[in-house]
Image (cartoon, rainbow, N blue to C red; front, side):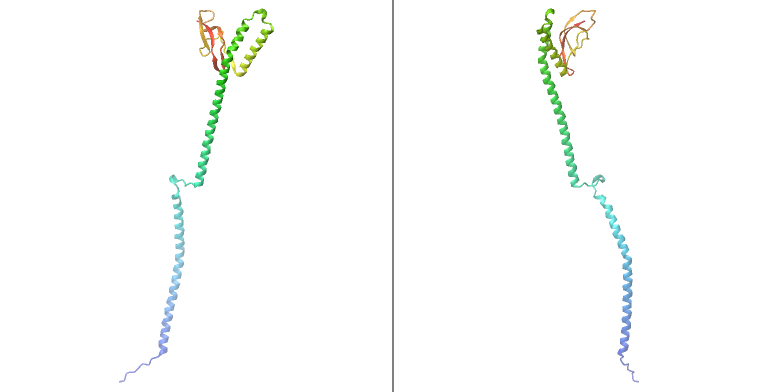
Length: 218
């Protein structure tokens, strides 16, 4: 029996290959669509991850601060604070220097005035002794009146400078102002009372320049 031979049909092969090609293309299109959808679904996740990363960086920023939670200062601010502190210190030092200088000047003035007053006091004492020795009939003479005016002028100048006479007679003895050179028994005067003054004492601005030389009753 003779075998039937199949004739080769090129159209049939072509049609089969075209169908397969269409199926392959269709499958590729479906895969492309699925891939695109998956990519769209992943975009929000990536954005969320990016935002989370940014928030984590923001949270890490405080860690860059200095010790005890204090933010590290800028070099410019540190320099400003340093210069400000330096100026304040210099102003304080200058103010202390000014006060100290004023105190020293006042002290020097008082020391100088005290020395001048101590040198003038013997002149005042001599005026008092000379006026006390003038007889009664000569007290109204021009010479005595001139001496008396000069004496009063000296006392007025002393008073203007702050020099005051220490009250002695009739006062209770005070070693801060009086220098007792004699003691006398006098029941009428009272105990420890000044009964006589030999030399006047003076103070200058509440500081004793010369103590009064007195006699005290026991």
